[in-house]
Image 1: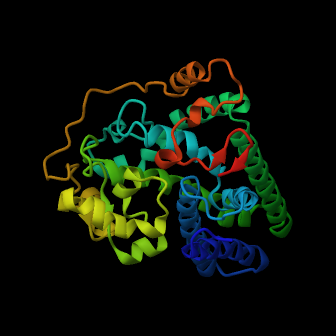
Image 2: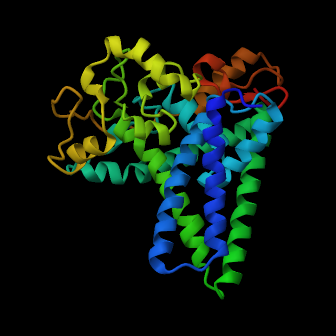
Image 3: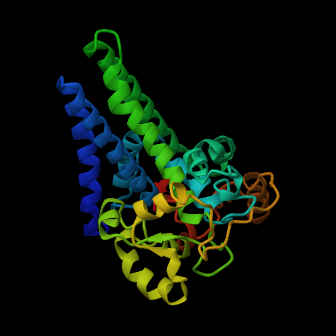
Length: 343
């Protein structure tokens, strides 16, 4: 049973992704149709990456086992274990927004041509996020066994999906895995690039210390239908566990009264054209140039929070583990750590 009826759309998007991949594998299309199908799967994979983001904040199903299985399925659509959103996104980006412990902080990008900042953002932040994920997984194996088992399930399912689709492509394509590259690999790469890169759009040139001006919002109804209201980004940072279907109302009630109206953008495409193409200047939301601080090294948060949690645990190995010591109202991670079940 769904927690919110709005997640019928979530299920429909995931089902459509698998249907289109099956179409690509089951038919031989001319190149124009193949290119169109590849682009369609890439977009759906990105929308499913948004779903991945959503489910680690607010589970889809009432049943815990159903949520575990669903996260495994969503991992296949996005190209990455869903549980890995927890360290890099929930526990680094949300807690330490735009600070030295936020691996996704936008001041890492220093190209003079702003378009390059956007295009290469994912590649700039990726190595640090990968290192944190690895460190978090090592700690979680003992301190958060529920999260670790779920991560292993998702990783195993994804590897099996890759091997199956690769082998099937080699068989169908006479030794050259064209279908795998076009209908699985490239869409997944686009989804990872897009879900990371949207952080630059949402936070560069904002004020992380302001109660509401810390995020740029995009209010287009069409955009928000396809992205599950993720255009309302400010309220998501203020109430991460709030279900996506409730964010427009909460945005109007809790964000708009104190938000600079320039941080409510009506069109993502129009904003990106202005910010990255013409005039393409890197500006704050108030129209002044972005002034970058001196380059800052990343500060460790994984071991820091581990040490804090160890002191709180007082030697117990059954307490709620450090990497997830925030309460669900702040950073819902989807797990009951002691039992390894979905919350």
